[in-house]
Image (cartoon, rainbow, N blue to C red; front, side):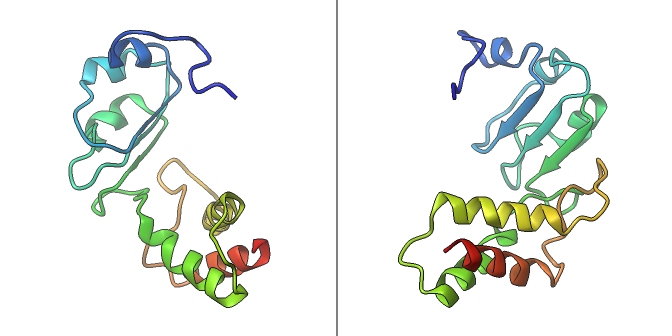
Length: 143
């Protein structure tokens, strides 16, 4: 699988032109004109916290789905969703390591807790008490 299937070279603006998805995990700033040049109704995950790469209010002007690391907007993507359950599942199963498959199982368990996903809710709240047990069970099953 290629990480750059279009063979894009140049600036971030070049890479985002006509792109369907942006996932930011490192901070910095993505200018609104770059977001406006993406494909129609893109998916934007600007996850740096507390200052996402694209402010959610800007992202919502263009995107069909927006996620952020901020707790004051819907679709907060935060490691607190995964880590308590991942560690509990690994400890309960006696796993010697946390594998990629265990992480995928954790992500699927988290997503599976949202019965009717909408653009405003693609993941449960970090305060949803079902999250850690569901993740732990999924991780233990894949250990």
